[in-house]
Length: 321
Image (spheres, one colour):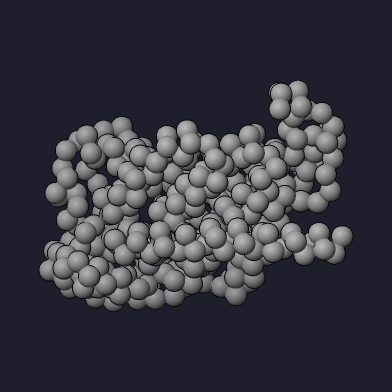
């Protein structure tokens, strides 16, 4: 396909799967906002965010109707992708209404591994080179996902809707888990109870402590990528979304989508970054090791479940057409 082909008139009825899933997720979380209205710090701004998203989706859809072609249809995915950055901090607003369970997951790590891997890993691997490599992998998270989705839009257009369904559907399932399973992660929990207590295997339950406390352990800055990761965490990180790890999970979904493209370059260029990212989740103390393990397992299950669900839904549509 040439560049000009993306701007030839090409009208298709209906919404992208990513648009439909975004609307469903916004409706679901709007109900949660209503349920937790009195406990949430600023529910009005959360509602306004949804109105902005609806407006953005309407604008890009209007552009598509004005000039229907593949280029303007592809434009319609960007509000859904950018929405992931908006929706993530909100998982904290929801899960912080419940007692946190970090003592359970820190205890699981202690039982399985005889230590806290999140405390031990970066004391074993201390070099600036590996610190920067792991932080680079962690920072590349959104870039890997964005590159894969855009590759589908530009180079695997006929499979793009399916890829978007698998990708965004998996992401939203992780978010929904976080909204009902409050786990802050080592960087928050160990700050709250003290590293000394964690190091000796003492893991007290702290209830809703994180509803009013968001302090985290400050990492040692060894280079530009550790600084970038810290900056991103200071802007968007909250005591939420530790179990299961979506960094491991969604990067695994991304790698499976990359594999499905049949493009070896896309997969193998990202693969070393993917390995660094998975290691980084524990190295930078964002996750307990059990979080990362379960994040990987859930990702594989979700990928094939969503892939199958898309085929099932579309076969029914075609049968009813």
